[in-house]
Length: 110
Image (cartoon, rainbow, N blue to C red; front, side, top):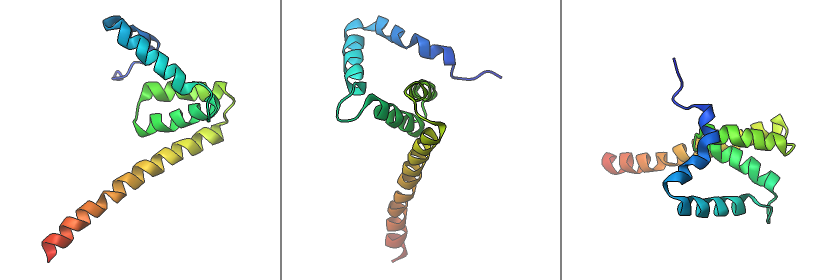
């Protein structure tokens, strides 16, 4: 059985610019600026991107930022911790919405 996501498609990412070159160039410039060294290093940003990639469940981003993190000298341990941070935030976000459920339960139980 095939996979919905094709890892080879990551290499075709820039092709999306063929539909609107101007918007692609603006996105590329902004994207490059985001990942340039600033208050945070590019190395730190790659690790953040890896965690976010897991939170938003983007397999292309996971591939890209796993490779980028490794190329920037990040260890497997650091990357695994970043994934756990993402998982904790996702889990916590689900649980905190339980407050909304409890509010309705309490309101209807009165």
